[in-house]
Image 1 (cartoon, helix red, strand yellow):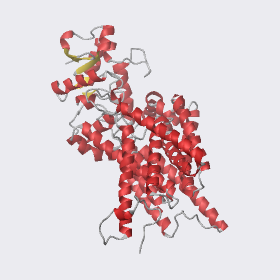
Image 2 (cartoon, one colour):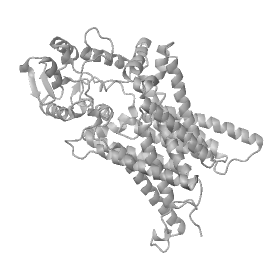
Image 3 (cartoon, helix red, strand yellow):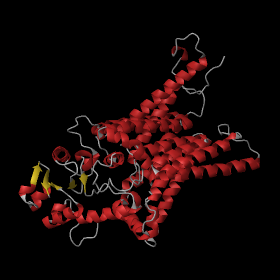
Length: 568
């Protein structure tokens, strides 16, 4: 009679799972394993939902989902500058666009969030399984609790330790799905299944070339390291470890995975490369400078990172290495650490590029714009979370009990803190996309605009606005948040930002006004004529400080926070 393998998940006595007298123990074991998998994935999805359930739209959702809707329906906000620029994430927009054009964007955001958390949960569960379940004989409940605890620790660390501000668990955008692919690739690498790793990396690169591309580099580093170790072991005549995949088909599967992964990756990489083809090199260089120095230095230049986050990141690196040294030696854990070391090597290269930028700024900017620190922000917390939980299984009992107590207390505190941002009352909920505006008055203004202005109208909006197109469903001349991806549009974006918000004689993005109205009526009229703006939305604080910038008879709507003027 066949029996389930000793390391198969189980809920107590498998006989209680099925009442079919002809069911075999192996079929009951598979059923229990499937139920266990579903329960674990659902629980981990809930853990991620606790952290990511911010009011809609969350950071970048107004950026990605409006772009997706416009990609599927170009007539929607047809004259919006950002929406009309080139697309760097074509696969994401092709997949999401039809849904975004058919359903309200808030519904699309929640559908995408749940799907993203689910895929992240599957990837997280796979990583935890490969590392934590390598020893047979553990009870099903103990394994499940270990996986869930690792996911909770990862959720906490990935939010409080990213040096460059990268995030993994959050709103509906392409990199969430790319990170799900990276988690699956990391699990495959730890298990020694490089064919699956290449395929997962290819899928990640298809939806987000930067996130997936760095994962490809990390997998390649670990594959090369493993090849060197295997050759060295073969020369010495040593057999491979018991949990090391082997066999004549391993190389063939790896090559097949590499081919499939390359094909998938090309779907994302090629459209991104096309954006710069045929563009004047001077324009490409200027666009890179704008991205690195003026718009995104908090993600791209180490000296602009938040120091507390850098310290937390370095402490997490140390924690991961300490936990690795404390656990039972394992090739699987070693390959996981290899992925982390590769990500840190990429970050170190970014540090070097930033250090030499003063000597070769143009060349350095061309490279620094690829987010060299992003991958370690996700991989380091992942490795630390799983290795710490693994250590808790093998450490001395008093230390383990104390550590478990502290860890569970921290996780419980984190859950309690996250409850503060869960959306309950829609009218009272303030999304992170509206953190730089008077949120309630802003939504009321956008609602009035959507219901009372022509669909083809174009607006001048305040510099802090990031959700105008989302709420108002109208085009805007330019948005600080919505920077394009292609070089020519990046340069045009900067020009528009200066025309709308820079006082005369200023040439820095640090010296901008919050509204075009603060530059005077003549400047408002001029930019409205140049860019075809029909209305302007002015913060009430600007009026309180400098008076009415436009004739009062052109005022068409006002509330406690904003005033709307018709310009033509």
